[in-house]
Image 1: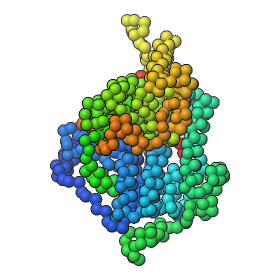
Image 2: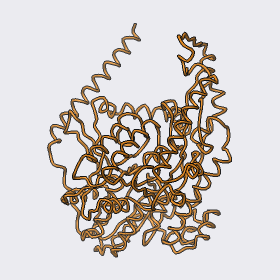
Image 3: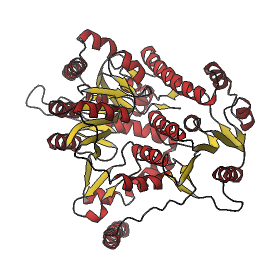
Image 4: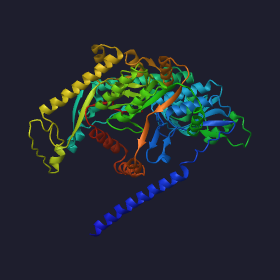
Length: 587
């Protein structure tokens, strides 16, 4: 009885705590919600500090709380907000230079490339770019290689070793745990489900990963070679033998320009600014400066608008949110842009590994209806693979970066099976049916041949529809599509050669094509979608979900937690999937 009392007391206390937090949030919103956002002041003779130690998304996002408007958010820290800020700083008389002060960058390779190109453009103004880090990761060094001068801590390190990736395989784990994934796939390169079928990587999968890793490395290596004036064969030798792993070695092979403590680096920044001795360094972070610039750019007026609609994250059937592409939310944005007479063209910015086949088809349909009314140009980010390519295939034009990972035209289905685990626990499932196929699938029974054939039939049908969408959208024959499909992944550069994309470039090029197709010169940009949140979603943000995540990480350890998430991810998926194995991390 005392135990039950303690449990009830704990539950009651939790609800009281949540209620107090919620009321407090409302009071804070009432006090500050109506107030104007505090202005950002940029001091004269300032340096713009590029510190990217938070997750970078293509889209900062706009969120509306329907019943609580004082909580509305309009994020201005997305990738292109940062790019706009760097472009604005180029002509801002108060900004004299940029300091890249960043050891770790939480962004994809293509996102990093976009920021790097913005820094190159900034340098054309004659203003300086300097970089400092205690530790340079390979990605952060790639970004920093554009700097006029690169400095590193005397006790730091530089990672320059080429690209690698690692995949976990679960075949033996399934047999030992009793949890098995029933897999049906179509396409010999559809590697997203291979870890459930084998204990080691197939030759086909190893081939495609090797091709796109080498393609990505060639791009990064080429740009670093140009920036540092080092031949690409020499960069390969440095990577192969780790000849830049210490500060002295890095300087000896000319990957950095100097070794200094941070206070000495600050002294160099002051010198570059022409600051008097003892004078404080004036600086502003790129994140804060981006908000300042966004308010400045709002004043632009034009009767013409181009809508930039972001499809970022897993494609799911249902509502979406920041970081997830829900077909309802995305289609609403596309549909509204189609009906808005002020919007002359649409750029669909895709950064997605794919997901639900049904949701992808429904989004494809909305794009098809829209391009009959106005141009729809696709701009691909880090990923536009599988379902991410499906929703791009019928666009008026497709633009990808050389480092974009795309293609993966294939289909699979995954069904969790707990029969062995249930038997080990003494659980037996019994079924009663009225017809032969009343049960098409049970997680407590092994798929029989008839059930597997039905599911495979659906997978093949979806694959046929997928390849037809690609053939029709890209003006290719069925044979041409089949030669580049079967789930194979391509870099943007390789995709261009195979007719999957039309040109290489970023969002700026996509906007240029959109303006040309709409026959307009002057335009403003409207970013979509707008996300709507409800009370239950607000309560999740009080930290309970995060607390659960941190607890699991602490109990399981980082690697085991990744394994747990990988399995959990597949058990949650419903229906056929058009998905790239985005858990494949590139190091």
